[in-house]
Every structure is written in C-alpha cells, then in structure tokens.
Length: 201
Image 1 (cartoon, rainbow, N blue to C red):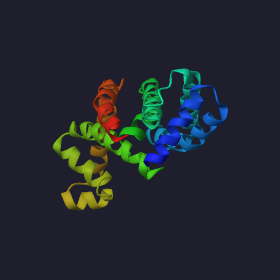
Image 2 (image 1 turned 135 degrees about the vertical axis):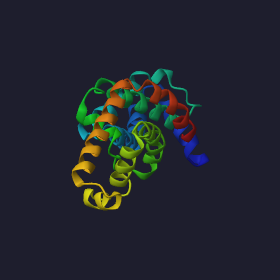
Image 3 (image 1 turned 30 degrees about the horizontal axis):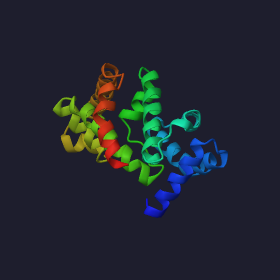
Image 4 (image 1 turned 90 degrees about the vertical axis):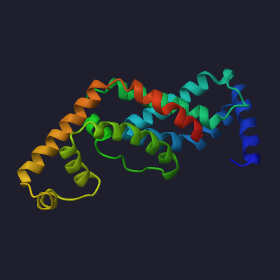
C-alpha cells in the first residue's frame, strides 16, 4: 500500500476506534471482497464465506476501541479471516465431501491476489497428504490430477488395465481422506502456515 494510502487508512482506523460508522463502512467496502475471496478459496462455499465476512467485521466493530492504528489493518483483517475459516474447517473436518473438496481437488481461484496467500498454505498440506501414498498410487494420482490424463491414457502409458487405474485412484482418495481424518483438527496445518501467511501481509 502506498505511503499516502497507509496514512489515510490509519486515520480511518482511528475514526473507527472512536465509533465512527462511516469509517467502519469505508473499511468494510475496501476489505469485504478480499475477505470473501480468501474465505471462499478455503471453504468453497458462498454461503459460509458470506457468514465469515459478517463474523470478521462484527468482531472488528465489537473490538473497535482496542484497535491499534499503528498496526497493519490489512494483516489484522486477514488474521481474523484465517482463524475463523480454520475454525469452520475444524467443525466439519469429519465431512467426507468437504475433506475431498478442500484437500483432494485444487480450489479454483476467486481473486488472484488473495489466492497467492492460499496457494502457499494449501500446497503444504496437499503435498503432505499426497506424500503418504505408495509410489504406484502416487504416480497414478499425479498423472490424473496434475497432468490431466484420462484413465485410458494412464492405462496405456503404464500398461495396466483401466479397472486397475480406477481401483488405485479410489484407494488413493480413501487414503487422502483417512490422512485428513487423522489430522482432522488441522492444528499442525495452522501452526505451520501461520508464520508464512503473516510474512505475506
């Protein structure tokens, strides 16, 4: 953020800490799309992401008197968003469909800037999960999901039957789900990525 904008935002935060609703609206209009994009990239749910946006700014409003205008408001906003989003993931960690969406299929980009943050933390857990697969299953999985090859192409290239490819992919998905279930509280993921996220703000 340019120096002039940083000074301007500091003044807005000061006004917000004094209960100025226009200042709150200004910050909401600036950051709510970014908060939504980041949360959606993690949760892959428009409804839940909208709830996260509301929770983030409710927390900001309720704690407005404690805001430090000399600290990065952007960092503050995204820290709250990250925590609320991970808390949501904790609650639904046993949901098979959500686990598969978040940790097996790569999230689609909603906002290129905010997803630079998501990509770094997503890749850490994703690679850890895939690394747990056996070499044979990992190869088939990577050919399918990373290289975009069809089961027929994989079958021909590896000289194995299509049914074997399907069976190995099914077992790979089960293994990834089981890995997430064991690590379902996401505590290690959060600890591992927190410092990386902070450095990006």
